[in-house]
Length: 155
Image 1 (tube, helix red, strand yellow):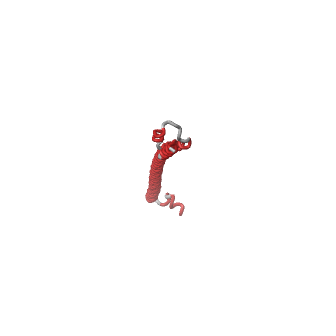
Image 2 (cartoon, one colour):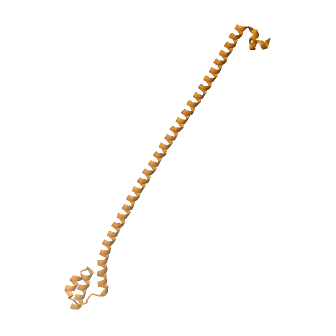
Image 3 (cartoon, rainbow, N blue to C red):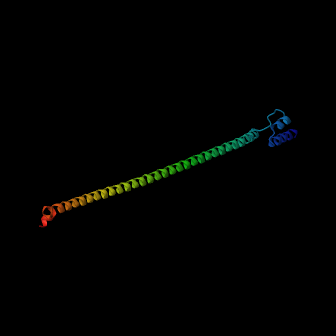
């Protein structure tokens, strides 16, 4: 009976996960069954694996946070690059528009210059013709109509 009582005490102490108490009550005899010892070891492993799981979960959360930060940084860099490219394209477009405006202005000035030169040439020719006709009339008046080429054709 005493022996059974001791076994119950050992089992109860093992049940509350205190193999030290069980050993001190019963001494060093192998009263505990292998299944109880494994259960105690499993409980310790479970507590270790719980802390290990928690640590792994923290590590995973940290990796996810780092990955999210990296994605955010990459997205900000991409947006900045797109903005720089957009600004560069706008600058190039503005420069092209300005070059085209300058070219149109040059072409207009050249056309106006050519028109002015043509007008000046026509004016010089008109002045030369008027002067030539004036000289011919003066010569005709001086020598008479018979010698004037223009009047002699008419007879």
